Amino acid sequence: MNILNLYTYLIFFGLIQLRCQAQPVQKTTIRRISSIEDVRVSTGLQSFDDSSSFRVNFKLSSDVRRIRLDLHPSRTAVNHVTNVVNAGQSGPDDLQDRLEMSAPLLDEDALSYQGEALIFDPKCRSWRKAGDGRIVVGPFGPSLFEGVFSLDGDVYCVLLSFNYRKLRRPEDPSLPLLGSTHMVAWRKTDVV
Image (cartoon, rainbow, N blue to C red; front, side, top):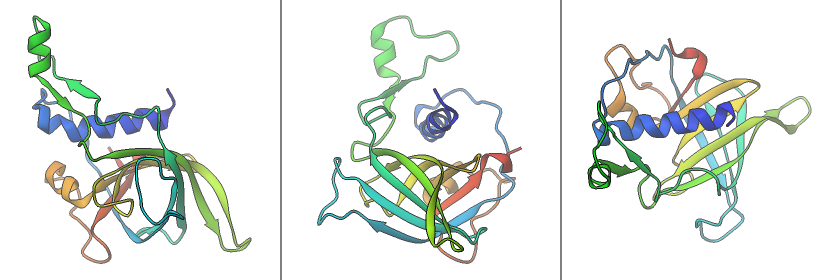
């Protein structure tokens, strides 16, 4: 399992942790977040569904570079039939306990995608591959997503602002006041 897959699973687990009421774990503090701005989606199709490949490009409020994710449906990532089982401290005694304590990892309407992360180079006027990405798209379409992507070795985590507000602790940064506030991102290196 590569590091990007690991971070994807950690983000999904973090999102579902509240729903499963898992035992508290030692939390970390995010030092800095950026908003995702100027999102542009191109599918090449009239409609968007679970078999669609697409491109989404955007900017981070803390960066001048344009980022593009070239994505296709993920056949290996988690999906809506994947369940998380909260075993508690001592673990469930039988299968019925496990089923009662499980919860779907993703909403039924969520679709998972994976692909390449690219950065636009204005000098060459072209895109260059800088890493990989895995995202989950909800019922609002590909312009709103959650997941992870890497750029030149830096791993970025993306959450919808709504979910960031729910998970945010007092020591984490507030949502940016300027720019788009639909999605936020932070680098793994900005977490202490």
